[in-house]
Length: 182
Image (cartoon, rainbow, N blue to C red; front, top):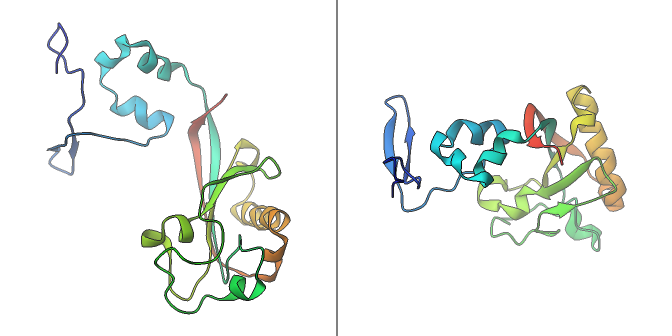
């Protein structure tokens, strides 16, 4: 599909790899941060207000935290199930809340247990929850160690039974321009 100037009005593929090889698809879906979408949107899409408005978004820094535990953080009703990491639970049947979660009572507005929501990619046999939480700009200047401790502390407040669990691994990724300011 092209417009009156002969420019594409639909994205049907993307160029990838060192040879910039074009891969074509029936549909292209891209989940990108604000700077990323600005890089990939074709210039002629700016004639449409909904795409042009993307260039007016103001970005904010974020810190994305992943913390792995030796049990299931969001299992609140059964201490035995919360501590049980034995056997294969890669079928998504591990105990806890299998969903994207939101809270007004933590610095991270959204979070999920990736071992539950995406077990094919993130479940590891013999290990428990892998919580991913997105902290807003208030956390950006803190050390990675402090952000991890703040995440664990706030998870413990949201899920008091999780105080019985130990963090076995953590990672923090800071992005200076990511989400847009509302």
